[in-house]
Amino acid sequence: MLAGEMSSKPPRLLVRRPTIDDLAAVARAAGKGDADGRTIRYWVSRKLLDPPVRVGRGYRYPLRAVGQADTLARWSIRSQGLAMVRCALR
Image (tube, rainbow, N blue to C red; front, side):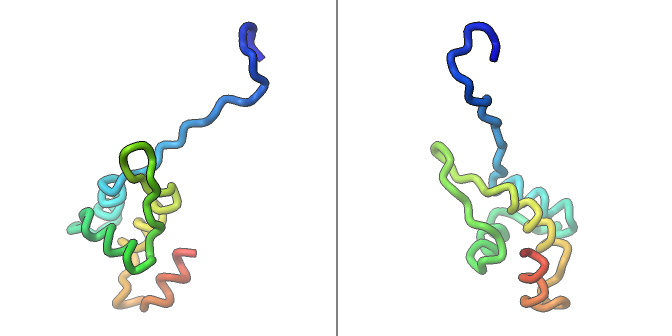
């Protein structure tokens, strides 16, 4: 503890949660060139991507959603099948 500090609690780490635009950029970088916010919302509605949570005034996605968006963009549901893609997302 530094001089002048009154608490023995460790400092809270700031975790930057991704926005819908961040996830769309991840999907585009992974090979899904036409990914946008609508794509991300569709994946959330199909329960393939973790839903956003309210943070302050906006909504942010959990960090796990970055890996999910990357996996969904790289794996084709048509060629792999929905069950296989769901298994890869776990």
